[in-house]
Length: 359
Image (tube, rainbow, N blue to C red; front, side, top):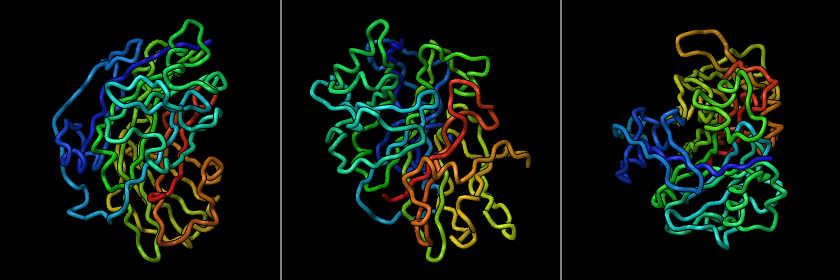
C-alpha cells in the first residue's frame, strides 16, 4: 500500500517572467522560468503545509540578445515527468486557501496522464483557478481509487495509513504567470516514492536527494518560444530530469549523409534552450523521423552518455510524425533517470516528451 502527503517549497523563477513579477530567482539564468532540483536540505511534512522556501540571487535577461517573442494568447501544456509511476493526476488548488473541496482532479479520466505524455489545458479555467496563485498536487498509485472523488477527498485518502495512493504538493506558481501571453510549460518531475520504491541505484533514477522517505517530486516551469523559421524546424530542449546532471544535447538525423548537430549546450535542470530556438535543420534534413536519435554527452566531453530514438519518443507523443513539417516549433522535454542508467529499477529510464511549442 502507498500513503504519503508531501509538501515541497516554493518555485524558483528566472529571466523574463522574473523581471516582470519581481520575485526571487535562481542562481542560474534559466531564461524564462525555472526551478533548481530538490535538495537534501528541503523539508517536507504531512498535511500539505507550505514546506521550505528557498531563494537566491536574482538573474534577469531575455536570454536571446534582445529577441522579442511573437505575441499570442496564454497557453498551458502539462507534462508528466514523474519517474517512478506510470501515470498521475493533478489537483490545481488556489494558494494558500484552496482546500480542494468541490475541485475535480485533472485530467478528468481516472487513468490519468501517462509518463512522458503531455496535454494542453484548454481553456485555462477548466483546471487553473482564475486570478490566484496555484499549488499543484500530483497524485499517483492506484488511480482507480480516486474515481468520483474531489481533490479534498483525494488528499485526505492519501494521508490515511495504508492508502492506495501517494500525493505531493508541488511548488507554488504565482498568479501573474498565468496572465502572461506566452506558451507555458509545467512539468512534474522527480519521484514520489511509495512501497517498494527503493533500490541500490535509486539516486540515479530519482536524484541525489532521493530516499523512500524523502521523495524528490518537483516542478519545472518554463515558457516555450513561439518563434519559427520559414523552411526550417524550430527546436528547443527542456531539462526536467531531477536525476540528470547538466548535459549537451545533439540530434542525429536519420540520414547517413547528414551529421549529428548540437542543439542545446550545458543544459541544466529547470532550463529550456536554446533561445531563440535551434533552426539548423529542415524537415528534409532529418530523413525518416523514426530513425532520428537524441543524444546527450557531458559538457566537457565528446562521449555520448545516452541515445534515445525518435521512434520511442513518438510512441509516447501526441505529435504525429506525418504532421511535422517546416515552419513549426517543437520542444523536447528530458525526463526520467540520469543518462546511461540501466533499466531494472522502479523508475523510468531517460526519455523525452515531444510537444508542439505553441499548441
